[in-house]
Length: 460
Ligand SMILES: C[S@@+](CC[C@H](N)C(=O)[O-])C[C@H]1O[C@@H](n2cnc3c(N)ncnc32)[C@H](O)[C@@H]1O
Image 1 (spheres, rainbow, N blue to C red):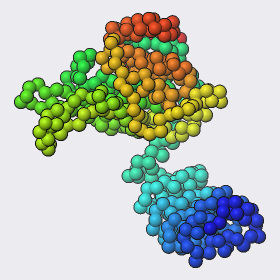
Image 2 (cartoon, rainbow, N blue to C red):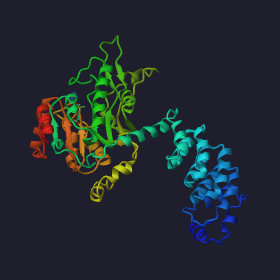
Image 3 (cartoon, rainbow, N blue to C red):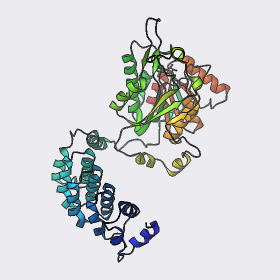
Image 4 (cartoon, helix red, strand yellow):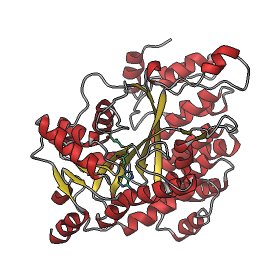
C-alpha cells in the first residue's frame, strides 16, 4: 500500500511513472481503491490516461473512482471514453458520475450526449444531465430538450423547474433577510391566531416553534371533528408559511392524542396528529428536514398497560407513550442553506454559533415541564435547543399558540425577539404576572389586542 504523502508528492511530478504502475488494472481492487481514493485535487497536467483502463474494471467502486478522477481533469480529450463508458455502465451511481464528469468539461461537444441521458431510466442520472445542460440553457436545442422534463414523473426534476419560476418572481425590493418589523418584536397578541395572521406582512418571521392545542384533549379548544381540527391547523400553518422568510424553519411539537372511551362498552380513540399533519405541511410548501423525538422519562407517561401487565393477552398490549414528535421543516426554496447564512454579517454568525455540548442524535431526552398557570407547557430546554439550532441572534421567533410564553422566555434568553399569539386572556395575564414577579424582562414585553396590532402595523 502507498501512503497519502507519497501519492501527494508523486502527483505533482508530471514525469512520474508511479501512477502507471500503481494503477495497473491487474492490481487487486483494494490497492487500486487506496490510490484512487487518496488522489485529492489533481494538477491540470496530470495524465488522465492512467484511469481509462480502469473504466472496464469488474469492481464498480474502482470504476466509479476512476470516473470521478477523470472528471477532475475537465478535459475534452476524455469525452469519447466517458461517453462509451456511460452508455454501457449498468451501475447508475457510477453512470451519474460519468455524466457529472462530462458536464464538468463545459464543452459544447457534450450537449448531444448530455441530452441523450435526459431519458435515462434513473432520475438521478437525468438530474445530473439536466444540471450539466443548464450551463448551455441559452442554446435553443438545450431549451427544447429541457422543456420535455417539466412533467417528468420524478419530483426532484419537476422541483427544479418550480424553483426557477420562483427565482424569477423574487422581488428585488425584498426586506433585508435578518431584519424584522419593530412593531412585532417582543409582542404577545391576545387574540385568535386565525384573525391575527392575516395582519402580518409576508416574510416577517425567521423561525416558528409551536405546540398547538391537542385535539379535544384539554378543555381550552373543542373541535367538532378531527377533520375540522386538522383543517384549523392547516390554515394556521399555511399563513405561517406565508409570513416566514425564505428558506427558514418551522418546528412543530405534537404527539398522537387519545380521546378516552365514553364507557366500558366502547374503546378509546387514538389520533396520529404528527402523521396526519405531515402530508398537509409538505403540500403547502414546507420541506421536511428532520424528525426529532423528544423522549421523557418513563415516570412521566400515563400507565396504559396495567391490564396487560396482569393478563398478558396478545392484541391487548398498549405502549406507554414517553415520546413526542418535534418535526422540522424548511420553507421550500431553490436556495441552499448557505444562502441563508450569507445574509448575516460575520459578527452575527460568530456570536450565534452553538458552542460546547450539543445534541448529536434525533433522540432528545428532556424532562417534561409542569406549570401551575397552564395545563400544557413544553419545557424551556426544548424551546432553547430549537431556537439555538434554527435561528440567529436578533431573529424574530414566532409561536402562534403562545400559552405560558415559553418561546418568549427562551427567545430572550438567547438574544432573539419573540412574537406570540394566545387567545386566552388568562394565559396572557399569567405571562405578564410571572415575568413581573420574576423580574424577567417584563419591561420588554408588549401585550397587544388585535386592534392595537392592526394600528401599529398600519402606522409603521
Ligand atoms: C399546547 S398549548 C401551548 C403551550 C406553550 N407551548 C407553553 O409552553 O406554554 C396551546 C395554546 O394554544 C392556545 N390556543 C388554542 N387555540 C388558539 C387560537 N385559535 N388562537 C390562539 N391561541 C390558541 C391555547 O389557549 C393554549 O394556551
